Image (cartoon, rainbow, N blue to C red; front, top):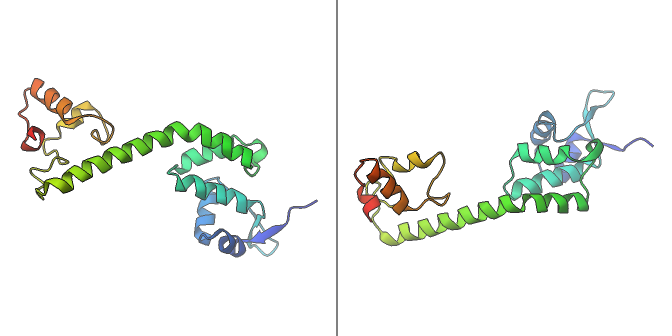
Length: 168
């Protein structure tokens, strides 16, 4: 039996995304469609579930390469089932836990910043004008768990003076 096909406009409306998003997803290999005899783009009805999967994965913070890799684990490019989602959600759990922890650290830093009232980029505890934290590696070092005291200790051992923000 042939798959029922629906137009790009109908898919966009039912999925709640722009047609350009569907074309982008297709270009990225996340969904696939076909052209009608008249040259119009069409998608199988089960594409709606695949788009819902993509949007749900994006909503929890996953990037398109991660979503593409997850969809590649499905046999024959089929649409994800509830069991597939459960398996993938378990696999993504540690990553999501790390993102939650990073956001909680950010919230704590922002609370302390709001509480100090300095309103100064030169003395703010979240600002590091000499970028002493860069010596510890790439990324937002404080949000990744590096403490101010460890950065200050590292910079002092390297012969750098601690900035006013680091002395707080």
